[in-house]
Length: 527
Image (cartoon, rainbow, N blue to C red; front, top):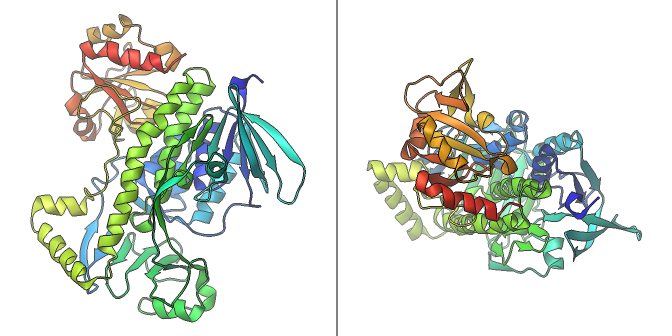
């Protein structure tokens, strides 16, 4: 193989590593995945998948199977200092991205599903009981030294890229001398995953009782997670609390026997971000790049966003459609939102899980006051206090209000059958150029600008807004609005063109005068 044809090395067989491996394999990029453990994890660490993560898994053909192991959730219900319901945060819009807003799951089931799917894909070389020893740069790629634990025999593996998905104690990050900046929190929390539970709610519950902040997340088949802030002397980080302590804490919510505890541990958490996410041909993803408190349920989801951003760029570079400089846009696009999410998770914990009675009183009074006015109610129930994911740097051009935002996934009508389909099924795996209610003649501007359609495989689509039928035949594929959601999403770009990146973020919104600048930005990242 030439350097450009070498496989990608994915270090870490957790959910982020398995996700990015499936995304790459689905795009025809060969890979080697190494994991030091003998199998996937049997511990339910992460517990929430959001709609954006499910949309990412949809691009690898996995969404339907994942939906079979999750609870289609309805967000989070917050309770006040006295245990009374305060408000229910359901998200901005049901199925805005094509899936439920927040979904509870068991991590061992997800990892097993992702691994089984990866095993069925050509070009995926999966090696458990294998650890990374060193990584060194060479022209056009890197050389990784790997070995099995306890085995003195090592293997030199030439690869094109190394994706570090090996968690908060990342070996790759340590080998490259990359530090992390942020805060380590000392509060100790107990997490207990139980079975035989009566909870059937489709939402998580955050009890903001200062005496004992508590989180309850029901799952499928009688599973339920309980998390409690421990008082001094009740437990230490990394220790397994005794069953009597667990039973005492869970007692207000259910009776518990020892055989009904699947997992129980005490932990602290970090709020840190890696100082750099790319080092030569090494890229950091997931906890290797950022770690956050669990209160927003965004740790794994942030890692899946990393995987979605990286996979299509590796695909374009590996297949010769783009230059390596395209990978420089990864950190530029992802770091700001990941950093904001880390800080948001900290603030949410400080407010919702406070042990200060005065702060809890102020929190409850403020929330009930906001709920009395429509803007305040929307702010809380639609979770408008979350950081908004938007690319403000990287592969984005222009200052239109939609530029850098994620395109929603409404249902669209596609001729000739006119059966409603999810928009992503039409967009395909690569770039999409959408003409929003533009005349046929307007498309000629791209031909006059040497638009890089052929090299980047940019799909052209006519988008008709309003209650209209798409043409059954024409020079381009066409779609129409099925239920008003398409117009709601794209009306601000009417009579313009919208360039959508493969991860469904909008790179540019263009009139005729803007096309040359966007074409130049694309050419800078192509070969």
